[in-house]
Image 1 (cartoon, helix red, strand yellow):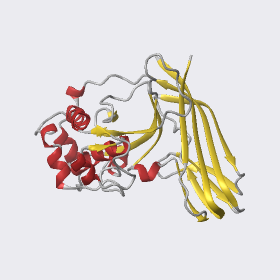
Image 2 (cartoon, one colour; image 1 turned 90 degrees about the vertical axis):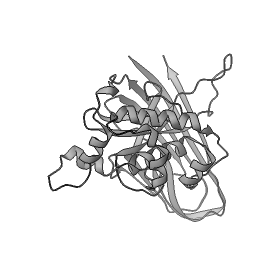
Image 3 (cartoon, one colour; image 1 turned 180 degrees about the horizontal axis):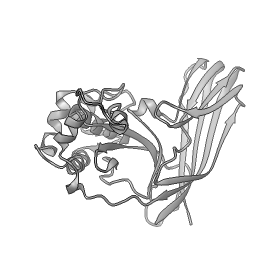
Image 4 (cartoon, helix red, strand yellow; image 1 turned 180 degrees about the vertical axis):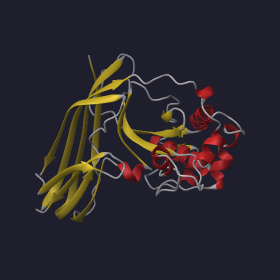
Length: 296
């Protein structure tokens, strides 16, 4: 079983004053995964960049580095992708190792660690948007009794966030502290993913931030609107038996055929779709349009 999609991610910056120099970094290519294939990709940029370099970042995500050395008062970056998402194996959460046993396997010891564990450990610590605090341990206390199978505990945490928080696009900004999100019980997918990461890492578990897209369904009887979709975020937790397992706290589901993976890192700061440094420009807010279209 699989699902095919055509995805358009269009970003338009209109600057109040000309930008004389700019460096931009784009995470707009989907990374190769066992559960998805990208058969076509195109990146249209206006104005034409002075230089462009496609490479991998430190986490293995495809990135595009752009340099602009001529004055410009707007920037358009339009990505077009054709992606096939494959079914993932069904896991027995009950058979996963105890969460506290997993935590212990990720802590420092005098014994050499496998390459897999070393890779997992890079997602166990604080990052720019995810701080480790006792508050997050206390919030997730009911989900992780001693000996609880890891994946059952993570699933319970996902359900707790889904049940106790309200999706509100106006409630937060990118830099809103997680303790504030926890107090207000409101936010967006990025906030819920960061909160879940903070709870897991504060318990000594390894978890990473996933950036991608989600197929959304229009209201009954309504056509699918072009540009009405958005980027999405969820988390993936490391299990010594099953590897990396994804959870979507915004929708209380395990990502499957409707989730398209773009990139992963420690948090949003590692994988934002487009970020950069400019000289000039004045005030500017990007206009972003995302469309996820199913293909027959």
